[in-house]
Image (cartoon, rainbow, N blue to C red):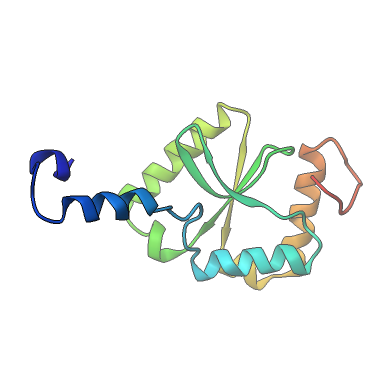
Amino acid sequence: EALERVPGRQGRRRLLRVLAAYRPEDHELESTAEQRFRVLCQRHGLPEPRPQLIEGHRVDFYWPRARLAVEVDGAAFHHTRRAFHADRARDRALAGLGIQVLRVTWRDLDRGQGLADELHRVLAARSGLAGHRPGPL
């Protein structure tokens, strides 16, 4: 947009070359809590979740087959009243698509094996594999 506003300016060609070569990262930087969640999944044999954009809603982690999303709620991003309400609105929108959202806190991450066991059960139930543990979902 800026280039269109200033046609013929010095450095325009160079900027066009830079913009043509730019390739944005396909992932966002993870918070420390999100990194801990990813390690917990690896350590306890949970299928690898991925960050996902679903109908315009970004979720921290998603297992498509189970239609299960996990949001890692840290105080740094979820402490305002506005963020609290926005999170709930997104959860309802995703529920309307058949996606269950689980919220995990820092304290939950400290539970390690207990949290992993809960996630195994939820993934199995949502994937139609009750009693099955672990495996690709």
